[in-house]
Image 1 (cartoon, rainbow, N blue to C red):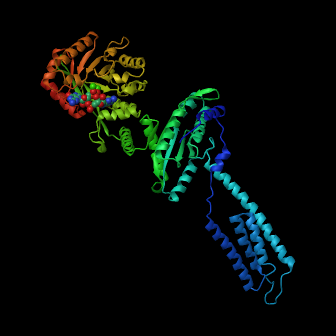
Image 2: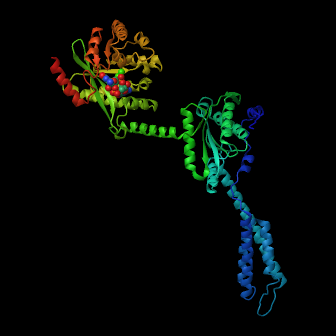
Image 3: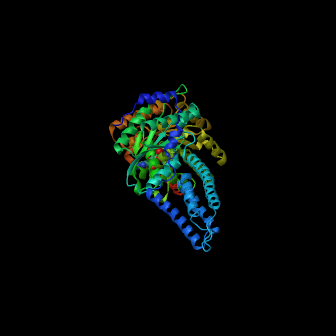
Length: 574
Ligand code: C2E
Ligand code: CA
Ligand code: CA
């Protein structure tokens, strides 16, 4: 049923990618509403009635008088409503009615001289001609303006205004029909424009539009931005429209040539079925946009609007905005979890952990906050907030005579450039602290991008005197590899809580024993995370673990409580 000669279409497009037939497109546009037959009959009758009423008035007022000039009204109306030929007929008809059959003075029985009424008819005709010219001039200008307002300047296809206009017409007419409407996007338009040139990007999009025009034949197509167009499938069932769109996207995957350059395009499509009688234009556009977003995130070519996904995205977006605002409206705070060195039982430092106290997001896991901020690419902002606030806290503690190290978590996107490094230097200078009190923890995930660059930045941290730990050790893919990197050596290795949890298991114990020995051989100290019981602590002690962190000593604490903890701890140890 849906047959298309792709090879001829292809050939045509390759030869002349910009073959827009503007005239064909214009012909398809209809701006003036068509009057019904009944409406025409009514208007025609009104004109005739007006003429007879005026004739009657002239008879009542005693013959030809200045009222005769009122006859121009129905004549001008006729030209305006039905054009010059009809105006001509009306002029003749009215001229004859107020001509030979109307006396010049009824009381005295004086008839009009023939030259008087003939001249009057000529005057009527002249007014018709003049009026006709004026009206056609105004209409032409109006049409041109409408066309400019409804056509996309670059592609020559009907634009978004026309889409809104047409859809509103259907909605206003209460058309009880369901349409599949699809929005197509040339996803790599920006890439083509950037890496080839802008003109080629435009040509690629116009070529895509021509293909769509041929492929979707009689269904209406509208350009709605520099890389998106909409197709209204009024002539197909949903399934046919879907199949057609799917085949169309498959066809577009084959690269084609523009000015001798091979161009590969990527097309995404968002779709929905709309029953026009209970929809408004804004909700249609919104749903199409969301469906397109869903096509992007789900990595499929075509996605029909899914309400659940849309609700989920909406919630996700609200959370994302709240997190971003949290950086500025004090909904973030920091807590500190002590680390104890087993050799001398000394509390040597704390890990800085972020907390989010937003009333609408109680118990929202901080690891989720970090992930959302990473995905939305503003994790740098959060990291900087943590760095500044924890260094400021460190300064306060130092001023109180409390010497403590702080370990700050870095996320995977923090080391893609050296902005975090530079910011840390600024804070060190601002608060005048010694960098040896600072430590950064990063997981293996942070090293996936440009490994050498990451190690260069880490080396710079160490040159400043800052220590660097490999966090969540054992949960990544390259744990061992990173330990033996010749250009960089971590100061600490943090064994993940997963291992601590199963430390009572003999195999885990043997494995950890080996890891700790290897780390010591490389000059790296080992920290065990998530230690909760004395039994775990004893085993870790026997296999040579250096530092312990976990609920066994303390949960992460706010600054004041940590101060109390440190005081109690020193008294109990010494
Ligand atoms: P992490 O860096 O591995 O931090 C240790 C996590 O284990 C913390 O969870 C801590 O509260 C928890 N923990 C410590 N000891 C115990 C224990 O004995 N038992 C149990 N059950 N849990 C323990 P938290 O604070 O929920 O943080 C989760 C993760 O979120 C962190 O894992 C880290 O990856 C990330 N995170 C937290 N704060 C920051 C931050 O400021 N920046 C970045 N980039 N990530 C952060
Ligand atoms: Ca950590
Ligand atoms: Ca960890």
